[in-house]
Length: 612
Image 1: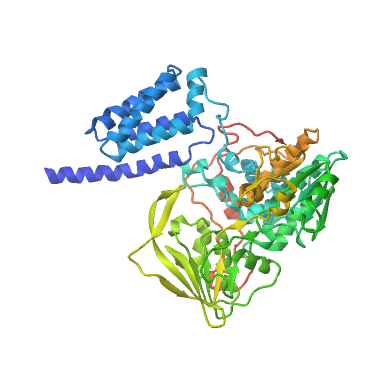
Image 2: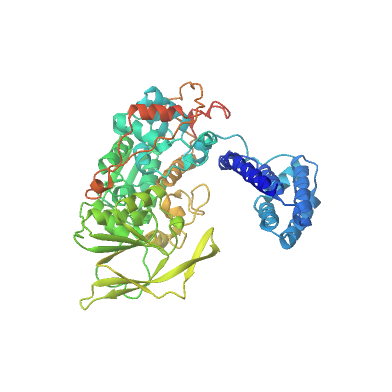
């Protein structure tokens, strides 16, 4: 009898497995804008359902917490209820036998602190705060809030020019984002409830592959306002601000220190990921608005004083990015053939490729810059390339696809190895990197931190070249001398992107947030343009002249996601040609057909005009 019971139990657990997967999918696609107290209640109920019932704090305590939270959500609680919840959660945390009890209590305590305003709003006004409401997942999670369902529908209908203009309503660099965006918009795609998220970046890439962005006419600019705005930095944030300010009717002058526009998109991302002629398509389209003058080779703060720029314009937007590489304090760091990965990529961006023929290259770091440097070193003739990182692979900040591509090209990941010193030969050249093996430890700042593995001896990694890719820095000194406040080289501004007590000065992008993604820089430029417009006394709205087409009926059949394919690794690792292969018409039709049009079926249509 016991054997039969055991077999039935295992069969039951096996049947529950797929159901739990569906439960997990529902959690993963929890819609943005949901009341956090509702989410906490769902989490608490899931925890209460998992209790084994043996210990009183978990069995009875979680049920009492659930009842209190329901009273708050129904507007039947007072401020004393919050005190009771906190005291009960602390008791459960300290006395529950297992993690189901004490971890659930910890999550309640964290929620009471994190969502304090939401709890008070429900108690005092019997309603959510103003930040909640029905939102389209992909549009909300895109930092620039692009109408993603709309342009996907246009691509499906074959309206590629309309798709591009609809993207440009909120993001004037559609080609750049089609090539290198980290696509946060896909994280909570509702398609996950059926199969898996839509390949949003792939759809955008198909659109710009069919018709170049600079072949699609931009909207007509508003009548001239007579106002002049200086934009310092011709990267994604600066050029985004210039685009919208130009369409608003303001005269824009862009000061760019390099010979070409694009910032790190031009000089920090290798050609195999983002061909530079494709970047020019976006820049040409932006310049075609007609109100933008670019002064190349002018380094503000060096070639011309910041104060002079400030006095000559009605407003100034500083978007200088983070184009300097951070350094490491290592013994032997002054050895020859030790370079910043950012500077190495900059050289390649200027078409000055280093010759690493037959050499062994070690790259220190675990982000996208480290991957770009390692894969570029391979294409510069290196015989062996190793990425040395002090954490685990799952802790790397680089995109999973970039890590996978690097490994497929033959690059070795040397994980849990903390750089300790650089060994030099008699001529001062680096000949080896010494590392201290690590073990992963307790969490700090959201991820587990490495600690020295005392029982393991330091490791000697022979190498001829070392590339340091441990972050990027901001050259803020000239602007700080002018009076702009900064902490650790990051400019300090309010949510309106304006510098306090310095009228007319705005900042955005990496120099205001620290190194981030291109789409976040674009979003910052868009916000800054509207804030500058308000500062100048206007409230322009821009209409791209395109709206989303009518929605087709939903395709509810579970269908696999079409991923962008790459050229074979054994071929692509020898050149800087673009690695991604175009999607076919059949693939794009299937992928677009998977979109559930959440802008129509569930959330309502988007406004057709751009506003702040």
